[in-house]
Image (cartoon, rainbow, N blue to C red):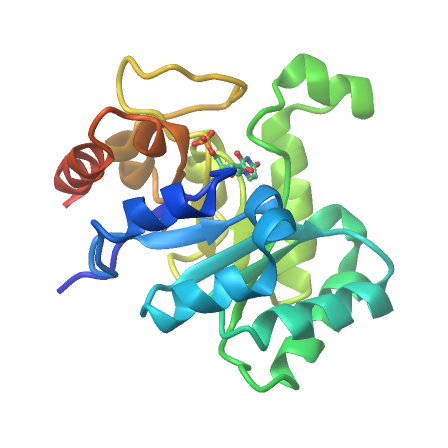
Amino acid sequence: MQEPRVIVALDYDDQAQALSFIDQLDPSLCKLKVGKEMFTLFGPEFVKLLVDKGYDVFLDLKFHDIPNTVAKACKAAAELGVWMVNVHASGGIPMMMAAKQAIASSRHPSTKLIAVTVLTSMDQAQLNEVIDDVTPKEQVLRLCALTSKAELDGIVCSAQEAVALREHYSDDFLLVTPGIRPQGADAGDQKRVMTPSDAIDHGVNYLVMGRPITQAQDPIAVLKAVNASIS
Ligand SMILES: O=c1ccn([C@@H]2O[C@H](COP(=O)(O)O)[C@@H](O)[C@H]2O)c(=O)[nH]1
């Protein structure tokens, strides 16, 4: 069976609600992402619970600090048994290399490490408030080059940059893309969006989807429809 390509973002403020959703799933349907909200509310025990249930867990804490601090945080995260963790590529190559080495020295060295490039909630105007004269695509390519030099497993970007990235990076360099919206779904705060099937056609490895699934009337039906649309 093909591994799941949808990573469901569990952005619940209620652990019981998250667990009731998870109880209707199984690890063949999706991977799970724990972000800043659930980690802050429910901590490492919640992450370990999902790992013990057999899920591939992406711990999306987007570390961004000096190399020593990020390395220790990544080692601690890997030792929870998670499938994937991330840092910000703008932390620079020494920080990313330190994180990679720390995971390699952990009790769970197979944990994948990826780097966030330009948040999918940022459009051209917002990006240019931070940095002049650059498009999201150019900035993603620049940060991706740093990530690749640091020999990480891939990046977080939007699916809109995937085609340009695949001109330079092979399929085993992971493109993990939030901002995925089925046709007609509310974009919310996401700016660089794409449908699940278009994202896969553009060369994305994993689709991160939160609200279109978790806030649907029937989340499992939406997840299964997305899986069917990309199989
Ligand atoms: O650039 C980024 C990086 C991370 N995210 C995270 O993905 C999910 C998206 O949730 P939706 O409800 O599908 O918008 C969320 O947890 C973000 O923290 C991102 O959106 N963009």
